[in-house]
Image (tube, helix red, strand yellow):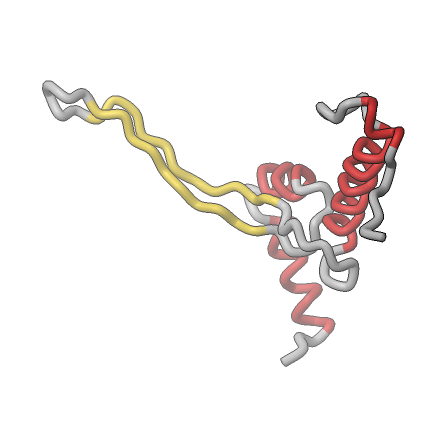
Amino acid sequence: MVPTAAAVVDRYQRRVQATDYGRWRDQVEATGGCTHPVRMTGAWTVTDNTTNQVLAHRGGHVMVPCGNRRESICAACSDRYAADAFHLLRAGLSGGTKGVPEHVTERPRCSSR
């Protein structure tokens, strides 16, 4: 079911007027423009073993990029993947970076013939 334009506008208005809007926006910006971020939730607690007293507790969630390689799904993550793949291929063909020895330039590609 596709939401109506009014429903979408209402959703945007509620998000912008929410008290945690600033924190939410920071998390969205941290994903680098990902259109399908993954929301991860977790918590941790520090407890004194002798008294069993809780010394600290924190919980919450963060958004991380989806990491999808298909541009039709997420253009931002697809661009990031393409840039990473380019640099890895370049290092493999030219050597001297990313731990690839420089002698790979003598045989930039191997053929099975």
